[in-house]
View 1: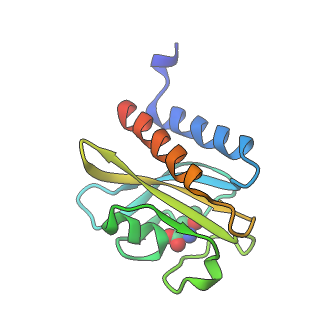
View 2 (view 1 turned 90 degrees about the horizontal axis):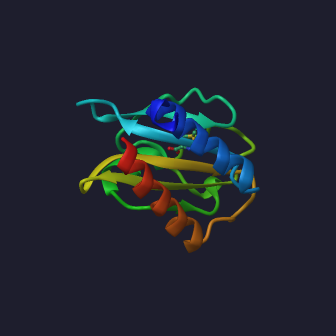
Length: 137
Ligand code: SME
């Protein structure tokens, strides 16, 4: 039966599982490259709705990861000048790129209301999640 679930349904469930099981994960979502455009488009997420459904490459933490292909851990969002605020309660953010056959196709983005909560363990964990997600895309 699992096989019949759409990719978006499964990604949404992953977001909800992460958000509800890790106390400092307050918003969890996937952004994907939007076709041939130089922008990211919001995919499935768990947490409060965001106005930032489209993010141009280079803009904000997410847009920077779209071009750097590297993890971006932000212990204090207030210290970032190229940052797009989704909610005033957010204190920290982590964005980990999602690769399919070596190509950066999107990312997982997590916001935290806790200051400086993310460690290398989160990076390795989210890289693992993204590898698994790449297999179902
Ligand atoms: N803060 C992100 C924008 C996306 S929201 O966190 C959902 C950024 O600076 O790219």
